[in-house]
Image (cartoon, rainbow, N blue to C red; front, side, top):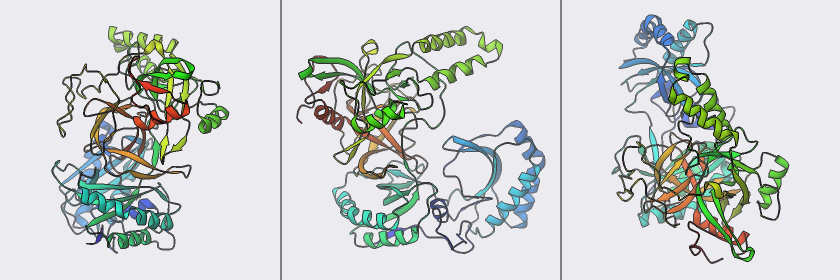
Length: 556
């Protein structure tokens, strides 16, 4: 069998790399593989989120631009199916890109780039002087352009062994060829976006490189293909932009539509003094440390969610963790996170007078204001710091919080109207009032769900192969990843969310995301790893979900 790559571009292709004097960026390398998308400047935006443009922009398009665009397309003999103007954002974040999209069914794309550049010049010339944001033009053949997304590797022992057997040589090829670039190496099944669940997909080695990095990607691809040529199965390879980031906030503050008096699973939390990076409340647990005769009610979340904003203290706790006998890191945790609460108050206060005076808005404002007068829910009492254990990242924290303690609920239905069900696995269909009664092991191939501060209820599948990750610090680990078949399992601000399996067991915490492709993947920390780490760190301590339970994990 052979290794397979997507064909590289040739002269005349819309994204052909003309400058050979310097190594290409990862964005240029990835774009040059795309033969059926051409843009007026830069590179095509990967799976943008589109919104209607303003009435003013739509009027400009209809009255001035439409006829001029049609004329330019005719000059270049480009057949078009539709022309529209929308506001695009990359994954819904960042600056708005006002984009003219030309849909075509042409297969000859040699003139697309020149046409897109000319249309963009006309577009920019007609824009008003007070215009803000970026302008772009894209010509695409939606049926032929690349829309591949990742799915989990299925439970097929022969395929899993085949991929496992390539790992060592793949890692060597990547680290030697792309030493300053690569961020992670994953093993996925690739399918076109929107494919039905029974579509098998292509087994693919996914090499992700940091945004903006430059490297000899062709040599790396050639070396990987030589490794895959020895495989007994056809395996594809892709080198794409992507990098790992802790799943805390990068999207800005969030408007809180509901603010219960007491926090719930997945609620917005942070620590006193951190006004920019909220995370999620994971679950409530009992911490038992027998030799201290200690039994306390706690909130479990990620360490980086409650990391001290004091860098001197954080530098210590990053290495040594937070422990009961050292007050460093015993910082006050808050609900809601200050940035979310203040953002919500600002929006409510800015509403038109007739809306702001409604009973519902006044009640909502009062509830959030009162909550933020005293947002403290407890203090961090025990935390991992930033450590590597058993080749995985340790990132957990316990907040002593008896006043908020409650039983953990399963993720609610996304629609809030029906019982949440993982239709693809058919197992998770419990009553929305069901409680999480026990911890459980993460099983490869299992369906899992979470409810988080940013993305709410989502579900995905545990991949059968771990992702090799190189963190910004340079440390390398192997992390368990969740891949959602139709969206992102988590987004910034979901760090610390409780992950439950198809049997309703508490199996882990959301740790980080990989900002690659349209959906990316999520890394989780298995609860078994957290329990083992707590046991070692406290000399025999353990967690339970009820006060009278025996430790689910009892051995060192």
